[in-house]
Length: 300
Image 1 (cartoon, rainbow, N blue to C red):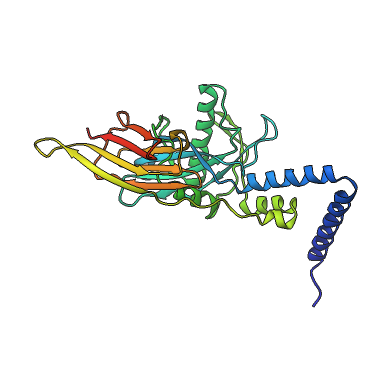
Image 2: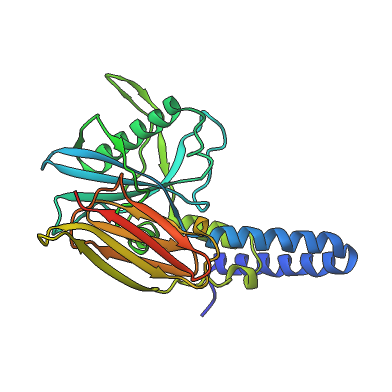
């Protein structure tokens, strides 16, 4: 049975690529070295997982009123717009309803450069466009008011990564004039398309590079301090992380009912809290000698 024509063309291109690399290695080894280093950097960037940037809280008004948390994430895999007038690529996860809570969560990822807004007005504009995208693609009506949460991520880091890396993507949003004006268009990042495009640029051995090591769950102790009348006063969480040398390595996300601690490629801990806590009054200290993180969460 004859191989399809496109398979033969691809085999020819791969053969030509390896021939070119062999010639470069022999004739200009310095150029070959720089080329391979660049490919390794590109592959490393491709394998970098999405990271939390900030969390927005707003409300779904229709079809059912409830709170909505929007995790805006940085992801190098999402390309940056080629110019300020070009559509802004994004990657969106599914809208997830938390069954035992009165809220939903959605994860939206942009290239890190997109989230580097110079002032609050530019960030607010990006947020408004994000709201418009969510309304268009998930058939929702959102409140125009929002606030930025004190934590950077709602839900666990693992859930967010799985949400953005898998599952169906909604259809692209094209240019659209509305009664309120013209909105900048968005185009979606196609995971399959991007994966094929990026891997086609890399030699086979580099494209099959291993993903970063998954973090482990650290040892922890959670206690509730009570007053003389047995009324809960505060929650104390001690987390043992001997591989950490500074609190700056830790990413802490806290809401009223859960806490997430993440040290990339080392530790990850997600806990539902037994009592509602005051996020604003919460403190975190790190004992460098013992490698222990202490989080004190007052109970209002």
